[in-house]
Length: 208
Image (cartoon, rainbow, N blue to C red; front, side, top):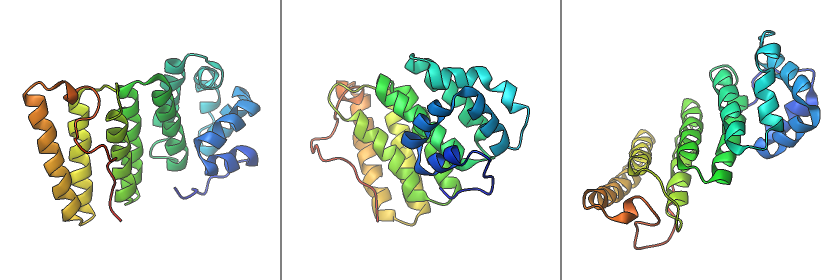
């Protein structure tokens, strides 16, 4: 994700943002909620944010509850979307990490859908599809559960993105896989909700 022209007076957080969630989060924790609030307000050119996001940042940087942290991150990411895609992308990566930490399939799917949407806005269709592939591969692991509708939606998005990217072969392959999955749903096969529905355990991959 290219850096927008909105660098701030906090080069530590700007540099950490470039490196993604795993770098930004410890840097933000080290700076503390007040400095991060100032940084966010300046990045998003909205001075009012400094006071508006103070409680949200307390949850992001200080809460031990993963769900509270993810909810707060989602709120910040939604504020950033459409204004600072690099920031939004990093914050949704944080939500995704929280989803994996908690094993919450809804949280994981919400995060990957948002991340894929940002990638698609930048015409990065393979990158967008890879988020949905990540969800499907996560869901296929032993004991992992989700609503079958989320799996079907992920398949549909991969097909759509492959077609946009003019890879009809991959689109047809995932249409076939989707049809196989839907047949399992229709016959109430438990694998439609839990674990791997494929006979071949190899993870799904995208296209070149």
